[in-house]
Length: 265
Image (cartoon, rainbow, N blue to C red; front, side, top):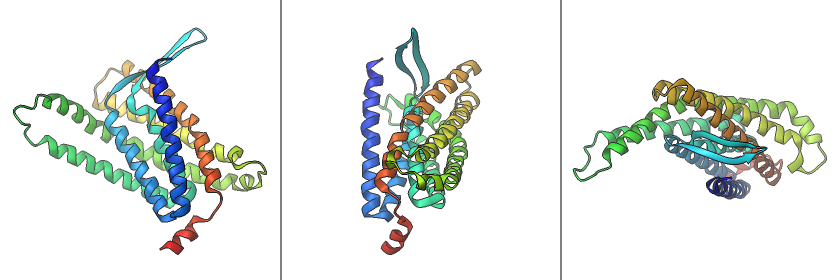
């Protein structure tokens, strides 16, 4: 396995654990601010993914059973699953309506981002600034990628939100009847795993096709490879992060935070 991939895994584990534990602490102590904190994480992940999605990278997962597992995908593929995870965390504690509110806030930040980048492009560069063409090239592509992401983001986030809420409602009696440790409750794992895998797989197809084929003008065979690479990376990461959602649920418990929020307000 390439050392860079190992570094990414370590960084990913630390980040995921830190966000989970910090979110739980804020939610339990200040439920109202918990929604704000989760939405802030949500927006940060989304904006970061749009910026770094312009860079195509190679993920070298080493050789397994005689086959080299090397995938090409946008750099954002490794962090985009965090977006679905945080959306599930919001939905779990604050419900479907507030999850949709978080989606709307995140979309607004994307619109502002594009506007600010577009504004900066209209300002003449300083005569001595040698990176202007490179900067314009990167951020012009970034703006196009953001437009593509708006479509995939809205479709997949809304799908994730309603699927999560539907599955939770349908499996709620079985979840409550489970007698083992909350962390190992299969019905908690099912709603997180299933919604993440479906939404991330669909996002990979929609986003890459629009961003790199329709807008970027790349050959279809190259775009197909990017879709496959991103789909595998995103779905894999989306599946692997499920234990952190189970940990989040275990630490949060079954407290009705809506009542606590009303008391704070």
